Length: 110
Image (cartoon, rainbow, N blue to C red; front, top):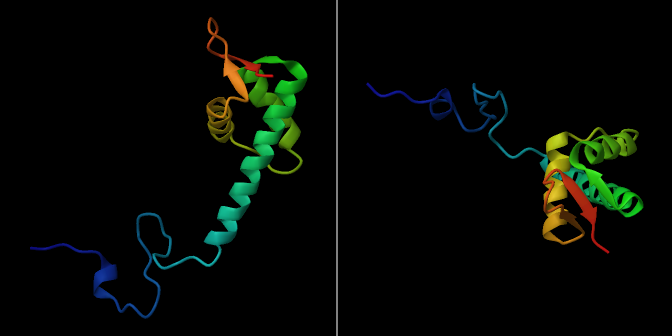
């Protein structure tokens, strides 16, 4: 016996939906727009993080996440994971650095 998905059996002329996540498998026309929105949001998060760190000079991770969320809340609600990723990118770009003794504290690099 061989098992396959229904998508293999159905005609390809209409969109085939994956039963696991319920999304169409063909190209989504709004995918490019969502990608652009995410790109713009990344820049807004970067700007907010740098702005906060420039003003405060030093901040713990939780305080920084709370402040970024508060500042961006009127535009969109960023997830803590997204903010964490943007902090990691800014560390790689050497805008901010981690404290050597306290790993949860960041310093603005002038």
